[in-house]
Image (cartoon, rainbow, N blue to C red):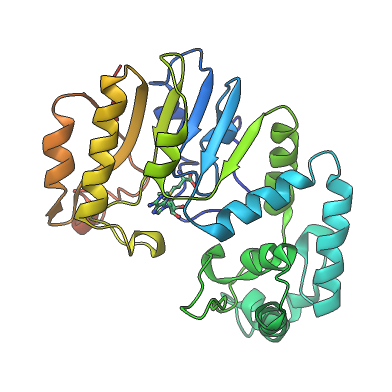
Length: 300
Ligand SMILES: C[S@@+](CC[C@H](N)C(=O)[O-])C[C@H]1O[C@@H](n2cnc3c(N)ncnc32)[C@H](O)[C@@H]1O
C-alpha cells in the first residue's frame, strides 16, 4: 500500500485497499473526475485529472473536506489548532510521543486508549453538541477519537458516538500530510447534494470520468440506511443517461452478500463491462461472508 494515500477521514467502507485494482480500469487521461459519492475521498486522492468535482449527501463529510482543504499550505496551523483542542481536553496523543495511557495497558490490554480518553472525549462531545456555532475542527477531533472513526448524528443533530480505542497517532499525521500535499495540486470543487441533482447540473463530455461508489443495497452501514430500491433505480437510470450521452462511468457495487443478491443491479449490469474486484471483505476462513462479491461496472 506504499503508493496509496489514505484519507484522514478514515471512512468506513472506503476504497483505500481496493483503489489500485479499481484504478487499472480508469482511462489514462481524465479531464473532469466526478465523484457523486465521495465519502472520505480515498479514490479522488489517488487519481490524476485536470480537476475534481466532488459531492456527498452528508453535510458533515463535505464540511470536513472543506475544512481540511482550507488548511492546504498552512498545515502547521492545522496541527497546532488540533493539538490545542487535544491539550484543552486532556486527550492522549501518541503522535507526540505521549505515553500517559501506558499505565492502563495491564489492566485494560485491549481498550486502554478508550479507558484513558473516555471522560475527555465525552466533555468534548458535550461542548461540540451544545455550541450554537459548530466548530468543524472539534468534529474532526471527535472523529479521530470516536468509535471506529465514524461520523454519526442522532435525529436531533447531536453527534452521538462513544469514545473509540485509538488516538491521534502517526497514521493520522501521515494521512493528513498526504491530504494537504495532494490537495495543493488538485483543483477541487465541493458539493453537498443528492447525486442525481449533482450529476445533472454538470456539463460533461467524453473526456471526463464519473466514478460512483454508492451505498450498497444489500450490505449494512450507517450511510446505507436510506438507500432503497428507489435509490438504486435512480442510480441505474442516471448511469444509462450518461451512457446515452457517451460519458464514461465506472460504478462500484456488491452483487452478492451472504444469502442476498442485488438483482436489480445484477440484471442492469449485464449490458456493460463487469469487472470482478477482489474485495478486502472476503475472509476465506469464514463461510458466511465468502459470497461477498464486489464489482466495478464500466461503459468503456
Ligand atoms: C460507500 S460510501 C463512499 C466511500 C468512498 N468511496 C470512500 O472511499 O471513502 C457512499 C457515500 O454515499 C453518500 N450518499 C448516500 N446517499 C447519497 C445520495 N443520495 N447522494 C449523494 N451521496 C450519498 C454517503 O454519505 C457515503 O459517504
